Image 1 (cartoon, rainbow, N blue to C red):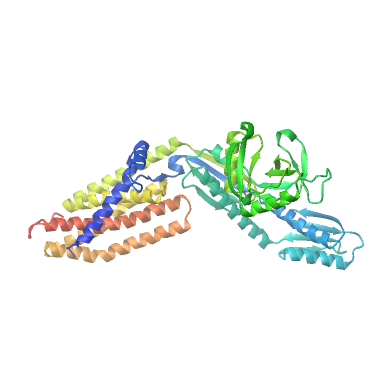
Image 2: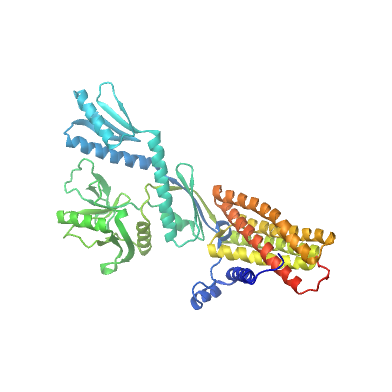
Length: 523
């Protein structure tokens, strides 16, 4: 037990040195860290721990998904499907329209029961999950979404919204945003280091893009959309466009801001293979017709198809400023939100508050570390010095691992580090007290150390394992700051086990190998 193999000595020292090395960038300036990145080989320690919203400052937004819009849109698509089915079978009707969560079909007076049943069959063929009700005379048929459908739509839309929000925030270049579901229709968004205005500008647009053929007739056809034109040449007018888009935003491969003819700001886009082929086919068959580029139910451009467009590339122009073009390209790359999202709560955390929190956290950590160091030194003498050295290495390893993982440090995370500092010496206290007992029983130095480490090991493992399980549960079921506390606590437990058992023991064995037998143990 008191002999340490060479390979283990090398491993312990290597892990300790690496932990210290990866923690050092946290104490360097931005200029020094950039110099390391530019002049030293890749992989050389240069990353630092990310600071969370409460330490770095940033934007806190609570967004609400417009579920009524979603239900209305689903109902319109459902209505169009039923309309097409009825047109195919030449079924006459008095009216066909949408309800808040479904559709209503009113048949012509005198229609027999077979017509009503035929309409019901068409509705069921499109989606069997709608609840059908029919008036006593059989002329009015309603199809409404049941609770299971509504819940499925809510879960799907909210999950898709969170994914799109995450992609948009990533495009801003921020690190470790917190994006969480709140209830059935809300999303919590915290973006460290960002301005609330910038985040709201990006999140406030649905960015639903579509290329639609324009109805050449002034008369609005069944199912057509009448949308406002915001292009300068036709601003203030409205155009009738086909409801179904030729190209949708999910067919875009890339979108980048740029400049077109005459220095006009444009957004250049590239379609994927499916979109390019579809646009080529449609443009071949509609040369000479107008097609509308629709963004969030506004026509931003309506050019004429002069010739087949088969290259899969194009430009969107609409009198954009440079900032607007950058934002639009970002939104198109990230994808459209399935529904508008409204900001219902907004908070900004200033960097000065974050700096105060960091300073307070540093003071608390230093005080805690200092008291523990002094206590171990007074209580255990030279062996306390060994424990103190291991404790300092332990703190460095925690910072190094947080830097490698690019974890986000919050105020609860700092609390986890402070708690870990106190817990880190538990193992040494158990071992040293056991060694004292063995010495009082008349055992030799070697026997006391051997027994101390051997007998205390099971207690140390049990104590730290239970805390590690608690940290795992907090991480699994907690959110935001609780996860941060769990991460630092879990990492601290693992590093403290290494430093207390492996590193301290190595120093004790080294001291023992350099002393004469019979020397009084300084503990």
